[in-house]
Image (cartoon, rainbow, N blue to C red; front, side, top):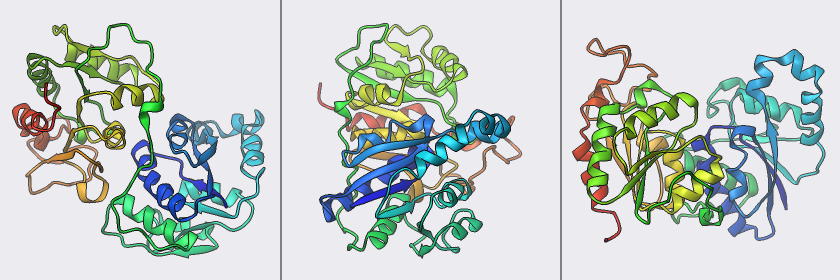
Length: 345
């Protein structure tokens, strides 16, 4: 059986889709997937052994420069690639407007969520076959449920299995000698309300290095690299990583002793890697989108307003929209949660 998956973004959401593919592969041993994905995250689908090909979109760029994308032939090239192969089933696992546009462009029938279950309601118009899922459950379980319905097998009751071995990603060349004992500290996030104060990160780095660990601080942009450098400043065992491919980050992540993360995509990579991890939450609900997997722990804000799902803190005691609830989570609290799960020295 050949199946086309439409799920474009975001990094963590793509990783949440992987267990649904594992379920399907266990139920239908000869199944193969192709996957339509944003070019920025094209590494992720290919981690799964049953994914054979990715079809890349540049929809963010196309949205900004639609005329140029049309003139350059980017849109027509994407359309041809999208419809070049025949599939037994096409599934939109994202079910929002941008994925629905891709579903409209794909010839033939597409399966997706019904009107009451789509993140963005008009998306359901793109789906010939529509399904319902339980909304108050983790996003991983929603996609497992949808996949089982579409492909007509019983949804497994066993815990989700990503079906991925990140150790197959080769280590990248880096400008320092990689310590035998190191931790990943993922300080960055896309929302201001997901950011833990830099001073807390600096203190945490000091605690970790005093315990004999090196600390790696990844980044996804020039600004985040500068922030990582500032956090690592003055500590010879803390390293700001330059921007790396997701495969390169995965190779380093899966070999780490553990990780402490903001609520962001790389936190979910730690879940896929199965390393001991503490992720810090304030703005979002861990029951719906928290990191999932062996060794995953969540430190959650105890403020009544959390989770608020606001990109900037609306409280009157907030400064420039920075999250008050995150300031109240101390470095010692976070470290103590991780320390008990780290491998024995």
